[in-house]
Image (cartoon, rainbow, N blue to C red; front, side):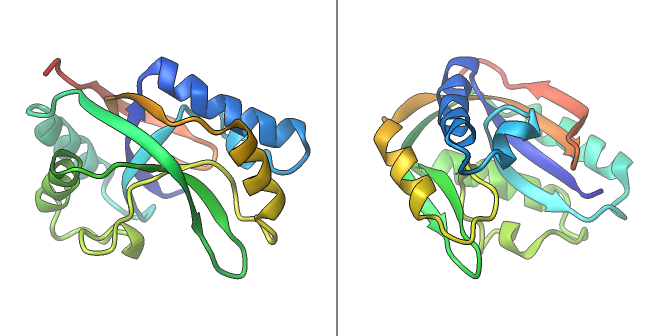
Length: 175
């Protein structure tokens, strides 16, 4: 199972995202993220299962020592489109979020990272659906319920997935 390092949304903001995921599940469109049973988050990096876990633990402890709670606004909905599509909530991306991502990459420069999470390729997002052959019904449902979300990123986690197994959690300091 691969590893991920994530930034979790505050509980109220995560609940707003969960309500969107619940609407998709209730309408029988998609229950992938609803069934994941892991709060809404932005993934900073995904590492293959052969990655030395102790290196990930040490790096997370080191980099998060200076990280602060970060304001975040999810302003709209995006689509990763291909043979199947994934819908996601789009954060307004600022320098501070990019700096957190860069500091993690700099702490583990020799480790293999999923190509989508390389510093030059990363698209920050909060995933709303699993892979869908036709994103139309999900997009229609999401747009019916969508309101921008303003909150904070409050916690950094190291997890293994699927299923999600919490390995380490670090609360971010007050600004």
